[in-house]
Image (cartoon, rainbow, N blue to C red; front, side, top):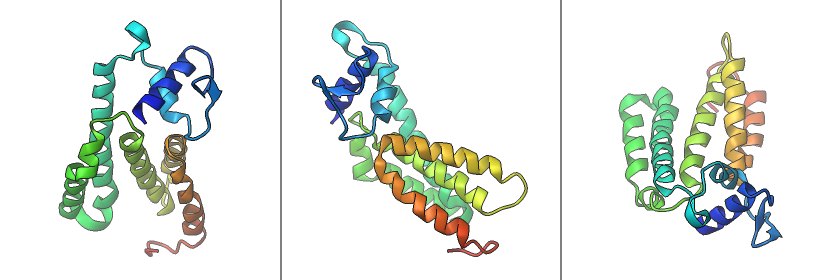
Length: 168
């Protein structure tokens, strides 16, 4: 999968569009490939791997921090820390550190989007700013993995059925 992202990113960087081996590609959304196309290509068209490694480690850290922030309000700091640590040390998460995949940036974007949208849905003054921020983060998450689209009907339901601070 990592090679597929690199090949479609190379196609984007060279101006060939979102293509894989010369054919139009539509299996996955173009978010990660577009992001990878922004990195400089080195000898033989290979991206700067050391820089990419740092960026993906940063996204992994941001993902764990986003999980903490998402759970802190409802479960308290202690439980949020436990959940974040379990997330960051789970075998699936640690395994993803060895690949260039959408999983880690998607985790960070999705949980930051949900946290922002939650703040907007809870109401109060200035709720439009976290709502707009959450919507933009959700759009970015959808451009990484289309599974984030399932959040949209849930958000509509929550918006239509919110009653003060009541939990749904």
